[in-house]
Length: 256
Ligand code: MN
Image 1: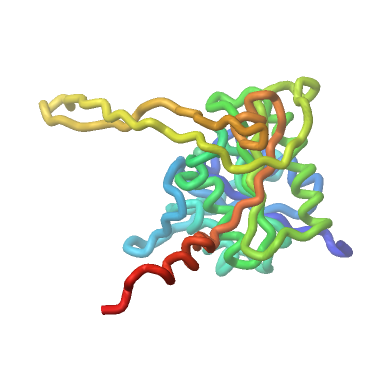
Image 2 (image 1 turned 90 degrees about the horizontal axis):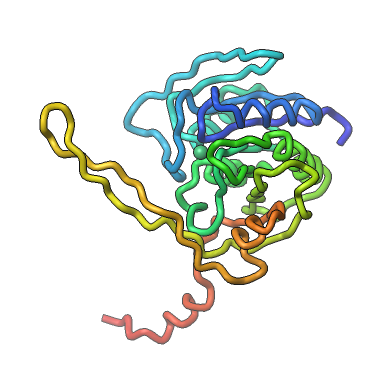
């Protein structure tokens, strides 16, 4: 690429999260970077967008030149408003993360991190979602290394139209990473439980919690490889039609 790549950094943990700072720092070694991210945490909002309320933006400057906009919207809103309004030119790459917590299996559907990248692909821009497999996030430098690797490869090569890269990284020191494996979206899901509580006024409320369940067995599944210490990369597309069942539907008696 002749010119310096222009990179949009976003996330779902909010513009003040440690992961987005680590991602911004990693991307500054590759090109010119602008950050557009939610003003507060918007994890698990999926691909939601804001249409009933106004969206407000606020310039943000963190240390060492980190600058961009905090947005009172979802991750998908951030990508839309960045590309359509806030940026002065179309980015060459959109990268979302680094999320605190893996985005594997069914979690991908709920993930704001992945949805920001999905929105990028919908706008025709190569996009990557990056997650670290820990809610505490100790080894950001490991995630930075692989975020940089996938970003530079994506800038050099091409991703099929409508497809994004979903990258998951073990929360380990770089030397303890076993390698990189292309992986399939596995079977992980969250078994919900609703804790019933009472507020100070005696009114009942609920808080969703639960546990991660992983029936994945295949050596190609994202969570299996991630837990073994591999960085996983899964190409994901948002074209949701089930092709073979579409054909089978022809045999249904649908004439009225
Ligand atoms: Mn998150």
